[in-house]
Each structure stands twice: as structure tokens, then as C-alpha cells.
Length: 188
Image (cartoon, rainbow, N blue to C red):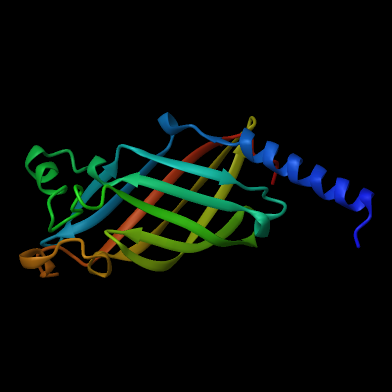
């Protein structure tokens, strides 16, 4: 049986951890999630204009951390009206049926000074896949910047179905790059 002091210590740690996590905030105006694919061999870049991230991360104890993202798939933009009008349709993101994509970390581990890997589940269009996301973390003047990139296979998530499944037209590999500006994170 646990003593009262052990229970109080555990509760104190839980409150402290939740208050640290509550203080962490992604500054969306200084952050971005962009992606690059190739159409007929030519790089085409897009971005998500609307998304949110929840962080509970201590760089000194990464294994206790949690990261989750929610991306509004209808906010995907290539900067061209014709292309942007196609993205919400069923063959691509099917926004009416699947308005959001999500990522939820299951483990986070340090891989070197200021380097981490977040493993978890990526869900796009109801297709759940395990991914590992490498993250570089830097800090200056009380602000942390988390950045990285990873590649997904769009057809694994049924993005670009039907005539668009031809990878000679639109490449299967999509490189996702991110930069998150975060306040309230502990030091490296």
C-alpha cells in the first residue's frame, strides 16, 4: 500500500507536468506545414493553412512526451485556384467525408543532442499508418523551434484515386516539412 507522502508526491508531479504542458503553445503565425509532390516530374509545393497541435514535451524527458496534430484537409492549398478546387474532391482528400487528418504520437525518443523521433499513427481519409517523424529542436530567447521532414506514400492513404493513381502523372512520394515555433518548453 502506498503511503500518503507517495500519493501526494505523485499528485504533485502530475499537476506540475500538466501545468508545464498547459504552458506550451505553438505560435501558428510563425509555424507551417508544407508538402511537396511531383507532377509529371516537376516539383509542386502546397501547404495546410488550418491546423492545430497539442504538445506536452520536456526535452530532458522525451519518453514522457505526447504530440498530436489535427489538420483540416480542406485547407490544403497549392496557390492555384484550379488545383485548390480539386483537392477537396473525393479522389483527393474527400473533405466532406474526411474533413481532418490526424497524427498522435505513441513514443518519443532522443536520437542525439536536440534530435528526437516521434513515432505514432497518421490517419488520412480513414487510413491509419505507423510513421516515424524525425524532429530537430533548437532554442533561442525562450522560444523553441521544432523542424523536420518525412515522406509518405499518398496511395497508402488513397490520396489521388482513380485516374490520379497513375504515379507517372503524380508521384506517390509526398515530402512533408514542418516548422513549429513553440513557447513554454523547458530547456534542452
